[in-house]
Amino acid sequence: MEIIQTPIRGLLEIRPKVFPDSRGWFTELYKIDSFKTLEYPANFVQDNLSYSKKGVLRGLHLQLPPYQQAKLVTVITGSALDVVVDLRQNSDTFGQSYKCLLDSRIHNMLVIPEGFAHGFSALEDVTFFYKCSSVYNPQCETGICWNDPDLNIDWEVTDPILSDKDASLPTLRELLRKSVISRN
Image (cartoon, rainbow, N blue to C red; front, side, top):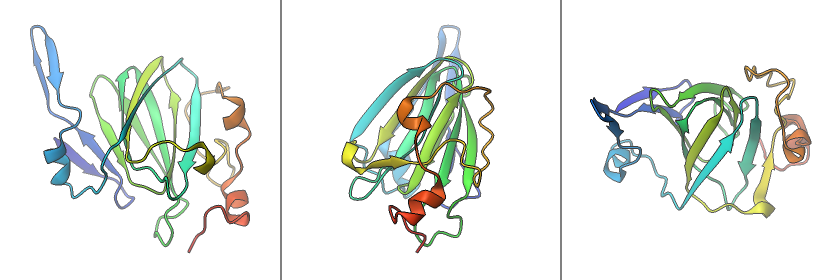
């Protein structure tokens, strides 16, 4: 597998080896031994699968301690713009966002450590798969609004289709003011 370091410490893009032949192709999405070589501390306990129509925007979601989640995300069909925001205390890149095009034709994945807000926009109809290091807990869920002016993220969709919950998420500044997350 090819490992691509991003500008944010701990955030990795992975491109697995794909073995095509006349019947189609084969690839390994996850193999624990390969992830041990990355010294990636996540122990995945929950897998999630979602389908989104083109133009849907999901996020930015975050699980607070003690249910923080590291994630391994990819798309099974279609393509999505995956977006993360670093919310780790004392991180040099706190508040910075990173975007990665996940495309089922190249089978790439993003490894997201604990402490990141996460979301994606469906650039076409997409089946989105992700592994999580902690089970989902609704009492520990929060997030950041997709159109936070301080983050200024270009989601590459016009008039995104949002859930009511995602449409009403606070800004990063509001989360900091409420002390839901802290900078230090």
